[in-house]
Image 1: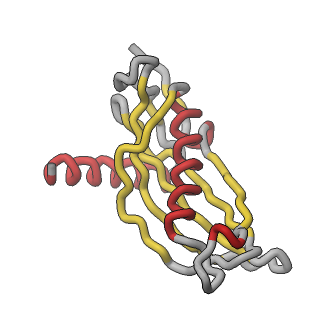
Image 2 (image 1 turned 90 degrees about the vertical axis):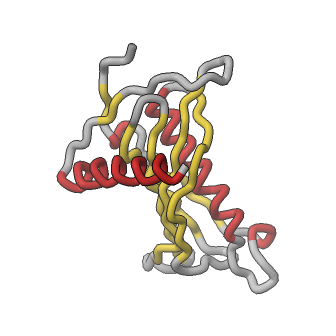
Image 3 (image 1 turned 60 degrees about the horizontal axis):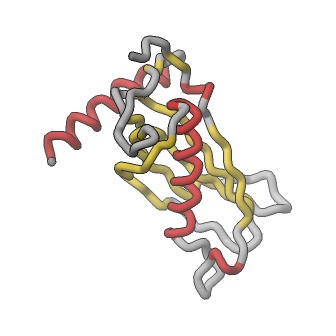
Length: 155
């Protein structure tokens, strides 16, 4: 049984990508599916760093697309652990884009991803607890519990 805890900062992940032509639609805008893939990878890395186990996506919640990224822009995906439950974790992921010749970034998308840690046989296994450190992390931690209860009620 795991009794230790980790902080969100210990597994925070930043994944930079450049938008290439094969990542876009005919208008040169980043495909939503490609962005979801990048966000899922960043969230998986974050989950696996926290759990120290292989983790699989179980749910994507409230994905919003706020702006488009275009060919040549740099997209930075940031993933941060919000809460660890018994075998699952909720990770907040946001993506920002910016032209190469500018320091101005814009938010492209944000979402909550849920992951489950699995052992070598593919069976869910316990993850370390997460202890929120800042007032913002504490608010997000509480909100995560409410989202989980809502998800469980809807099943």
